[in-house]
Structure formats: C-alpha cells, structure tokens
Amino acid sequence: MSGGRDTAGPRWRAPATAAVLCLLLCLVSVAVVGDSADRPAERRGGDGMAVLRRAAETSVRLSYQGVRVVSWVDSTGRTETARLNILHQPGVGTLVSPLHDTGEGTNLLVGSTPWGRVGKDVLDVLETNFWVRTEGETQIGQRSAVGVVAQRDNGQVAARFWTDEHTGLLLRREVYDISGEVAQTSVFESIQFGVDAAALAEETRQPDVVSRPWGDELDPQELRQLRDEGWVLPERLLWGFELVEARATGEGDERITHLTYSDGISVISVFTQRGSLGGAAVTGLRRTEEDGALVHVADEGGQHQRIWEADGFVHTVLADAPAGLVADVLHALPPPDRHGFWERVGRGFERVGTWLD
Image (cartoon, rainbow, N blue to C red; front, side, top):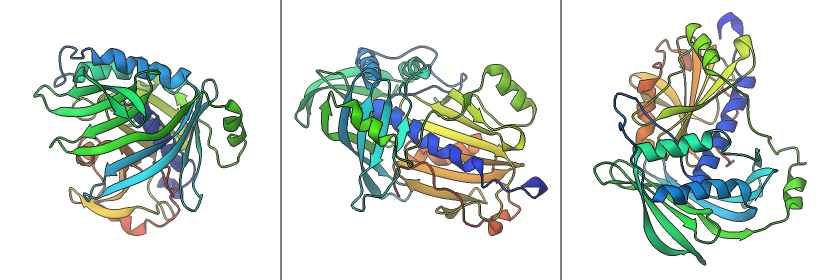
C-alpha cells in the first residue's frame, strides 16, 4: 500500500458482511436492475410477484427455525453442498449457523429487518427484468408450496421459487445459468414456526456471533464526492445488475465502500479500499490468471470471491450468482494491475464471503 501501509486490517472485515447480505437475499430470493441502455424498458412481472412480495414480508415478521441445504456449482464445474441452521426472530434478527461434524464455524447474526429500505427496490427490479408467474402447487417436504418461475424474454427459465402455502415463507429456490443448467439450489429440509426467542438471545451472547448491519449508508452526494476523488463506484455492472445499496465504514485511507448489485435473482457485492495488497494480506484463495493478470479466487459457500489490486485500490467481489457471471464482473470494474505485486502477496487475509470453515 502507498506510504508503506498494507490493507490487512479493517478492510477485510467488510466482505464477511457481504456474505450475510447475499445469504439473506438468497433466503428470500429476490434482488435488482441493469444498464439503462440495455435493460427492459418496461416492467415484465406477472402474478408471481404477489407471491414473492408476501415471501419478503414473511421473512421479516415470522418466527421460524430450520435446516437449509445449499448446493452450488463452482467455477471448476464441481457441485458443492452446505447445511445451515437458520433461526429468525422478529425484532431480534436472523442467526445463521453452519452445521459441521466438528461443530466448528462462525455464527452470523443479521439485523432484524434484512429487507429494510431495499426490499421494495429489489422486488421492483425483479419485476422489471423478468416475467414472473405462478406454476401451481406442489409439496416441499411435508408442506404444500406455491411455485413461481422467473423467465427471460426468450422464455428461458432464470429461477424458480417455492413458498409455503400457509405462511408464505420461501422454502426452496433454484437459480439457472445462461445455458439452462441449475447453478444454485437452496431448500429447507426441515422447518418449524413460532420458535422461542430465548434461543436466539442466548446465541447472541456468544463472542463469535457477528452483529449486523455493516457500515453507514452512502447518499447520492457522498457517492458523487467519492467518484470525484477517483473511486470507481459504478451505478451498474452487467446487464440487469444495478446498484441497490451503498455503504461505507472508516475514514480517509481506512475507508471501505460496500456496493451491492442485483438483477432480481442474484447478488454481487463489491468492496473497495485505497491501497495495495501487501505482505500478509491474502490467504485461503487460489491464484489464477484472468485477462493476462493474476486474481485471487475462491468458490465457497455458494459464493464466488475475487480480489485484485487496480490503480491504487483493492477490489473484493463476492457473488451469489452463477459462476459464468462472475468473470464478466471484472470487465465492469478496473482491470487488475500487471506489475507483478502478486509475488509479494502472503497470508493474513481473513476468509470472507462464506459461512463455512
């Protein structure tokens, strides 16, 4: 980092929050928009939007606990699976705990209103980008569920959702890549409603529970000021992926921005901070070459991570999206530097974007 400072301190606390945000949007399974020159000029939508809006409301006001199984295809084509304990209490939050044979892992406590201000925004984006219709009823486990499908203009399925007929809670989600193959699946294998808030309160007293939300919201004026100072903070990434929330923490050279983008189905978080990757800055990620420059990569917990240095800034991308979309993100952000600093990258990077060890 310039001035001899490395960025191994507060910067790497930020991406862990992105994982939580991505997970929450995965649980309710909706998100955002894209470039105004390319995105649909009118809303698509359909009768399935009412079902998903109910699911969003239910995710906040309903008390429930269950085990959710998440599967995803990583960038090498392998299918991975994780099991998570989900405990939600209105007014308290959502506790996400990885289920391991060893019992290890970090619990993440998310704020009591995960949708908050952006809830309506992300649903509006889904309605803009996709045709959304109901598909009738089916069984998810022992519960009757209403099916919803989101389709592209060419009729290709982009995602499917199943919500509990009685409570409205999202029970299952499937996300498809551009070839029509299933890229991500998330489903409750067991669930109970009306759980006691005391269990969640007890968990929040444990030292490894992380409180959320992260950072302060950036208003349009603050974003413009940062851009004038050389920060690359785009309003849009790929087609259909528009900025839905901007946050920041720290001051001066310690400032970290967290921008969240979505197309209505998938979520991409981008963290940016001034500086460079110094020694003891990165660990747990593999080195790969993209467009002739080295980028550090990980595919864990259903999320894809990319980290690189460009023009005096360090960028970290966490994507809850099909692997094929992730490589395209680099084309919407400053390309990685090619001055060979990667040889100096060591360990010390706190692993982020995953609820797994």
